[in-house]
Length: 469
Image (cartoon, rainbow, N blue to C red; front, side):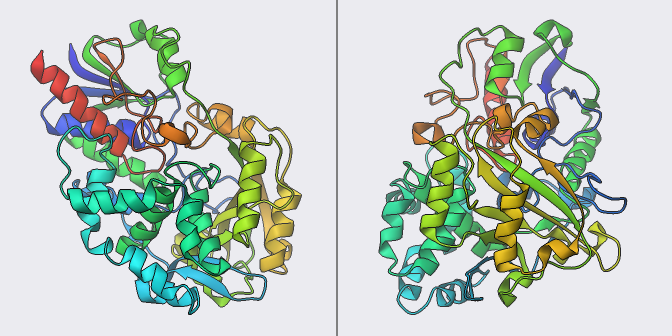
């Protein structure tokens, strides 16, 4: 009998397997697809030689992940690559606000009215970032926080809606950039706790940047897999699970799946019926004949570029997708240009680029024209650089990754109490009514992103259960 079986070889499933194998347990991972990766994959989606990330590409939470930082993943080929600027947010006048490693440079890009406000917001938290990120990514806390005063200060700023926090800023440059940071959660800006989302992304960028993985996001999954195998773990691909009986006997079963799939496979009935899935995105991967011709010079040297432009535009786009059930007329775009940092991702002189805009769950339309019209506003001549494009709306995203129910790449709506207490209102979110079954996907805390912390935290719950038995 195995000690632990993990279902799903995404970053969280692989991290859970590694954490248990490091404790000397026998572990096997079972993956339905023919390769590992989940939301951290790299494929040739357009033309030969152009290496695209079908989902996550920039990894501010990955490089800051306590789980990843505690593993020797660099020995297994993981290398983080940085652009000159982690992120830029261009405006129609050709200028841009930036998220720089430097708090001072970031603040200066907001203009004289808001520079001091931004410094006062983030500067006290940044020196305590390592303790803060460990506490935040361990929520709900089962032990005392490492730095309760800093966590409390962060909570006072972050737990209210982001719209409250943004009232501190006088001009829209700061509000627009911060709104864009919050929009990575694919939820309306006025939701409880959304201020924390923006703060985490800002602090992560200041602390260690917004890098890509050399060779693509697949490198993260491959490094975790190689490390697991060196620890004695096994990985089985092309192995679809329909019920628990399809798996070998084990003391614990850990699911890197959606709550819906877990309930179906483990026979939990309606246990997760109140879990809500959120809005989706329409994603485009491009093979380009040259770099994106951004008007703003800051955007040309940034890894991630937010295309809004203003905070009201961003709020309207999110509201349309999340609440009004329609695609926005002018989508807010999150874009990443990996080949700015990693030339190996495309043939010499060519580039890869991805962009997505928000759409309702399950939406089956085509947002390509709206996305490219928005890009042309800030990068005139963009369409002339396009050699090929691959599009994926909610149905295609759900087909690529079964965890993306309705195309929800956050694996559950990031709204209300479900922002932190997911998939159930419980101080033990990784356990289920079945004593041997656990969940470790992004549907559990701390939520979406390629950081492995849901798997890390779930592994602790499994270890405690096994040790007590």
